[in-house]
Length: 347
Image (tube, rainbow, N blue to C red; front, side):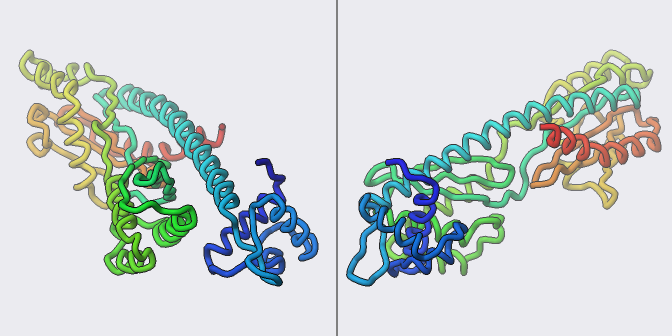
């Protein structure tokens, strides 16, 4: 069934208002509720058309209208189509961002290695302390609900769970409203027991649905990438220094740079222990990577906002030019966020 934009907005306003109040909705309420800027008389005419189409009904004379089952169905189908389109667009956008970011990071480590004459490493940004952005519950069949959860950075997770009793459209919409109103914009740490108890009370006999959704949210927010993406450049630069170039040390160092797991551990450690300047310096045995005990490593965390940050590092001999390296790091930290934002603004 095709509706023009005006009728669609009026129908959606009737349904949303009825879900919130449980009372029949009149034209005067809709004239205040929507941004259509229409008179009550015009809205009454549109409501009459919606009634003839079977999308709303008048429970008794002189009352406002309430949605019919057909109206609910059209509302739900339209809403799901819109959300599915939004999610698809978000996924495509994130793929494009990831491709651009990979190019930027590879260029950054290349420039760092060339400017310092040492080895440089950088991790791709990852999400931390994600906030919940959106929840969509959809009925798959009588006993299955699909929860689509979007968290900060537009990371999308789908979770299917079972329900013992079928849930009608109106109840499902009320649950969507309850979850989004209560939880959007919060981190996992901000969702406290009092809030959960209140939501379960409002959900009534469907409190188990709230519990299942909260479990899915926890999984989505705490999800970690299987492997940290790390880019390196100037690997052979450190072999230019005599104290690192003998066969045994060279083999150990090259092996350490090829093994991404200890490098990931080094970068994660640096995020936990960096000082107030944002710079962390490991000298010799201070480094957590055993095969880099003859080196010094300088790291810094870059922050792209929206919960996304990563770490960049420079590896060289213990006699490295610390002043130059730290200065280069500080300049890079100031520029990297700007590089990323400029690339986004070019789209």
